[in-house]
Length: 117
Image (cartoon, rainbow, N blue to C red; front, side, top):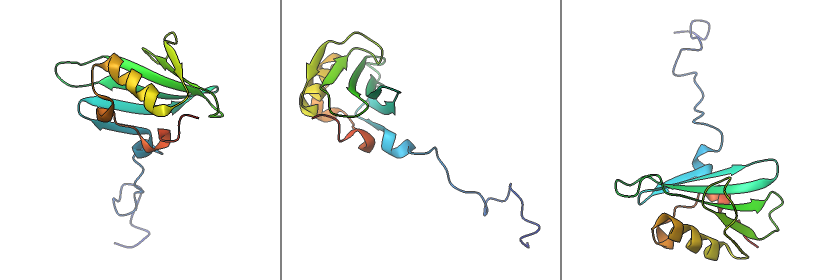
């Protein structure tokens, strides 16, 4: 097949684009799915249990977009703040408690690894 014959449906010409930043913004392990997003004002790391016995429990960690403020732990992404922490590890501990899992079981997408002060 010549270049002129190949078209957009030709798999050889297709660019692999599984979603810009998808791999660094999501992670899943031990029955917990983590998703990192940014809004106009916040960096947001949300967790949801996906395991058979604990499906649907949620927790979120938020920080201002500039990344210099304390971390806020919430029961959901848009829920009321439960507590503030300087350190990411302490915020993860609280999020894990809300989800009913151990902190070391929480997956953290690479885009969120630098959260905290």
